[in-house]
Structures are given as C-alpha cells and as structure tokens.
Length: 434
Image 1 (tube, one colour):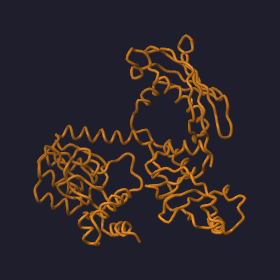
Image 2 (tube, helix red, strand yellow):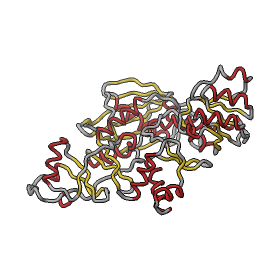
Image 3 (cartoon, one colour):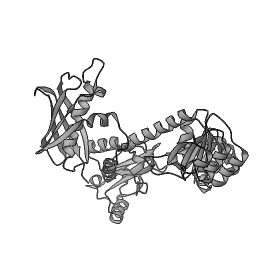
Image 4 (spheres, one colour):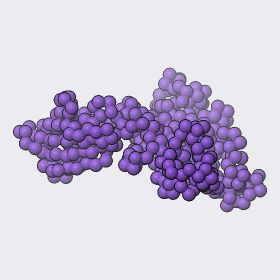
C-alpha cells in the first residue's frame, strides 16, 4: 500500500465532521507534510473531505448525486462568504427553503420547519427558537451570537452562520443560486452516471486470462491498466480476433489510444464523441488513473433522465419557445409564433443566433416526436437568413428528409406571414442504440 492510499484510508476511517490538517496527518502517520498535502487534495477530489473558508478541511460523507433543486449550507457559506459560528457537523445538510425573520418572535414557529434557513439579525430569542425547531440560522449584518446559541447549534448539528450582507441582499443571492441550480438541471456529468465497479485487465495479462474473464462476466470490452492503475489501452472482442496464442500479452494487441473522459466531462459531450467514433465503452480517468467506465447504456439513461425532469426555471430558450404553438403534419411539425423583444439584436431585428436557435430546436423536436429521444446532433447547416422585425408572425416547418438506422436528417424552413422564405437549415443527427 502506497503512502497516498494509507492517508486516504486513514481519512475514510475518521467520523463525519472531523477536522483534518496537514500537520495533524503528518504527525499521526509519520509522513512528510508534502505527501500529506497531496493526499488530502486527492481526498478532496474523491469527495470525502471539504475545505470551507474560515473553518478548515473537514471529513464529509461523499455525495454521489446532488439534488438538482437544492443547495447545501456549505454552498451557502461559499456564496455569501459567510462564517460559521456553530453546528459545523451540519454544513453538508440540504437547505430546503429560506425565510426572512421579519415577524414577531412568537410567530416565527408558524413559518419554520426542519431543513429551513432563518435569515435574521441579532435577535437571540428568534435564533434559539429556530434551532429548537431544527432550522438553521443565518445572521445578517456581520453580528455574532451568544455562547448559548452556539452550544445549542453544536448539540443539534445545525449550522449557525454569519454574513456581513443585509437580509435583502442575502435572500437575493441565495435565490439566484437556487435559480441557477434549477436552470442547470439538464447538465449531467459523467461522474453522475458512470459505473465505478468495473472489471479491468492488466497489460501483463494474457489472452487466456482475457478469454476466461469474458466467460465469467459476459462482457466484450475492458480497460487495460499498468502497475500504477493508469489506463494504457482498451481491449475489445474485435482486437482479439486473429490472436490464437493463449500466452500472448494483452498490451501487444490492445488499442493503445483509447478515447477517455474525466468525471467532470458532461454526458452530452461524451455522447457526441462516443457516437461519432462508434464506441460502446469509454474509460473515465482522473490524472490518468481509472475511476470508472461510461457505457452507451449510461449515456442513453442520462439523456432519458434529463428529458423527464420537470421544468423548474425559465431560460432564454424557454421564453422564446413559449410563444410558439406546434401542429403535427405527417412526419413533420408545423410551428407558429411571434418574434419577441428577447430575440432582437442591436438594430431591432431578430438576431442571427435567436433564429438559428429556433431552427435547430424545431428540427430536434421533429426528430424526437416519435419518442426517439436518444439523439446527438452532428451538424447544423444554415443556408440563409433574412431580417425579421419584432412582432412578426412566422411559420416554421420541420420535415424529416432521411431516416436511417443510425442517422437522420431534417430540413427546417421558416416563412413570414406573406409566405416568403426567411430562413432554411438542415440538421444531421446520430441516433443512439443499445
């Protein structure tokens, strides 16, 4: 076991909420400060420790998938540049709702519930009442709180925070953060869907080992690692063809240039490169070390999940599309709507980017109308676009002109109220199949 692994295992053995320092780790395990620092940073990447301003590095429970509609108190601390006065163990709990304590103390209990955040000034009685109801407290104006309140927060494991901003500014900043979190609901990362329990081959394994592994797992593709657990290639059933020598080493016949992604790569980007190159499995690496694998099944599942999510916040695209109605016409779609102010450029006509967004969105909707949601756009070609004024009625027709097993093409045409052509585009898309 390496020193890095020894430190990480030591951190994993600590209870949630334990404060960690480079000097403490070095002293306890007899390891240099430099090694301890690098290992703690690696633990932070793994998600088992969290560094919080004015608090330090703390052991936390790893969160594999964040709630797309919620914030944690740790994120509130980061957003507001706040300090934590008590209840450090609860900083990774989820914030469900926040309220401003602008009412009389005896009325506060009617409005707070467990998981709420009470935004209030230096009113000790109200702070204590919130904690007794399992609600966190954010004190505005940079005020401190009494030792009694701090002791109660530590006892319940519920944070008491302090921010130098006023109540209105604090509420606005938290509301904006929640809104942005909701808008980003469709941005799914590889780390959210990848398989961390994967079967691998070593470069020094033989063809015989490979065949035995395929018989046991019924898989056809395996990442290949070296002695440092770094990805050096990928072995597929296609690579095995023509190699009948059972003693031949894997590193002699594997694909030595595998396409890899990182945990922070978006699934949308991974879907594009996997669809373009026709690969079914993609190693997920962090500093060249294997941390999981992403399969085409994971990609399809993630895309289905994103499209099933409720719309909880309006983007610019949503504001534009809500002004359009849709009618099914055979294999195509007919959209009708108006040019709204949000679509205008500096000279008062519909901008090229907004018209292009309309064309591409309508084309993708046409491809997905038959519940075929596993689509990745390869290319969009706009033939021409003409100026359109605000308030103009436009009709958009999206017609599928070529529909194959793996690829589809759709033509999108835009006309003004006089039936004159305004824009035309063609979209080519890749269809994913398991």
